[in-house]
Image (cartoon, rainbow, N blue to C red; front, side, top):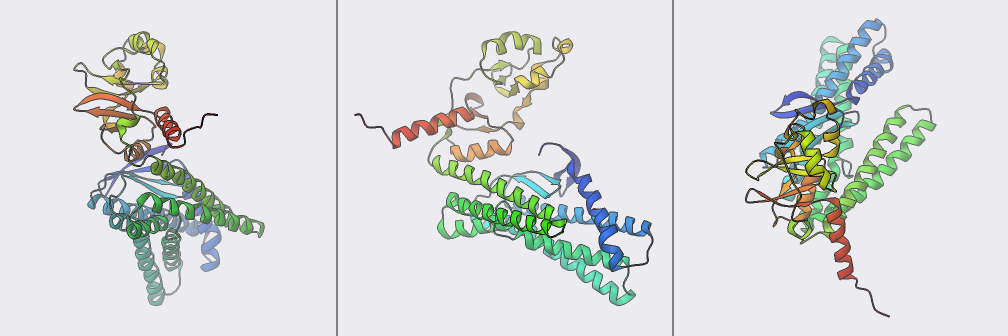
Length: 378
């Protein structure tokens, strides 16, 4: 996710924090310290409420890390590659490969809400127990609030709406029943759009009724509806590409450039003769080494272009989406999307044999549409 910075590792998995998280921390802490705790536990100083609000906000974010960590750990144990976890204003996102079986998807999707429900039950129980032992105070109230928030998080995430965990659970169950993964994904995405629009409507009604919390509900609904719509379109594309291989869509031969050249020489040679906005790179032995875009080249100050090598500003091969010619095209494109790009480098035997871009996929779809629906001569 753009605008995120690394914060170390949790459970051995990179954890990133989006720039919106500090804003979320302030909003949560302020609401808890000014709106929630004073009516619950009156008579304390402003400093006590402020500190308690900040602590509560931090602990709630930590519980979000546990939620996402559960997804990542279960996925990794099931053989699914996990890229990283990212916290942002509307929760968390774990980037990972697609589970290969419906049971694996069910386990990965259900682990997050289950963790939130368990954490919520423990915190709520601790708050009630502390209240019974020592009386009502700031700490028991904070624990009760945290417990209730985690229980709400777990229940909300179980709504049958992709991209929420409940949508993934629904998809896994439908996949398990029908054996058709793509159709199950489309149904879960359709459900996500419906639920998203309902959340937007509820949020608007709440705002009109004077509840500021309705704004967040509408914002979450908008995110769910938009994301579900994008995933539905991707699922429909995957259905249309069923049975096609990477070799069916790739362009070959591929224009490449030497990664050892300086930026200035590369611009004069490779860029001058190319009509593309990105060029794959090869090393001295002709093996693919990465991908460089015109934007990255333009970002190098003119005074440094005689010294900086192209490979120093390029995206290395390890961070590029790659595939073999015989691989299923839909799965390869999904992996490219997870890398945040639309280009797929096709490698066979350690050599670059082709490239797949958005234009290549569109051309393939148009060609198949013409074959499936041929015109009739007058």
